[in-house]
Every structure is written in structure tokens, then in C-alpha cells.
Length: 120
Image (cartoon, rainbow, N blue to C red; front, top):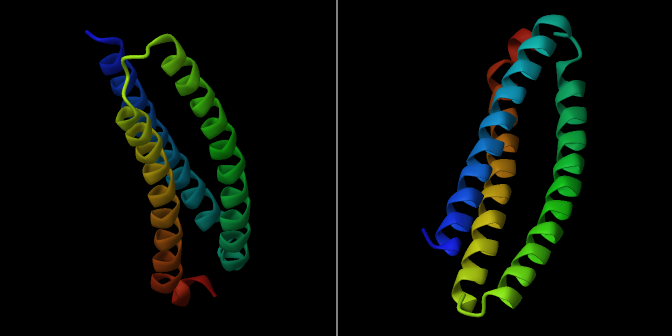
């Protein structure tokens, strides 16, 4: 197996793992707060959106910096890697992170609209 194939497989599986873990944590969080704080759920949704967006921004910014440093070192040591691979990997990661956040916000809006009669 080539090192570039190994790198690509590792990064795509790591991103899939992050998406799965975030989805599971979101389900646990919503179940807990829906049953415990029905009256204040709108406030919690807004706070959770703000805190999650802020934390995701910091986490992805740090991960992006580490990922860019890793790719720079990778390119220095392995000159045979083309610029296309670098651009593809960077855009693939940013694409996944961006759409996960968009899907999460959309899910919270739909949840609020569907359960607005039960919430308060």
C-alpha cells in the first residue's frame, strides 16, 4: 500500500468517526434535555447552537492548522505527491466539517418547529 493511499484512508475514516461520535452525542444531549427541561428548551437550543458552533470553530481551526502542517511535512519528504492531492484532501475535510455544521443547524430548526407546541 502506498503511503498516500494509507493517508487518504486514515483521514476519511477519521472524519467519518468524528461525524458518528458527534451525532451520537447530539442524540444523547437532546434526549436528556428534552425530558428534563421542556419549558426552557428554546433557550437551551440557542445556547447549545452558540456553544457548539464556537467549540466546533476552535476545534476545526486547530485541526486544520495541524492538518496543514502535516501535509507540508508530508510534501517536503515525499516530493512525488502532486498538488492535486493536497488541494483535494484540504477541500474534502473542509467540505465535511462545513456540511456537518449546516446539517446540525438545520436539524435544530426542524426540531424546534415540529415540537414548538409541546415545548411551551
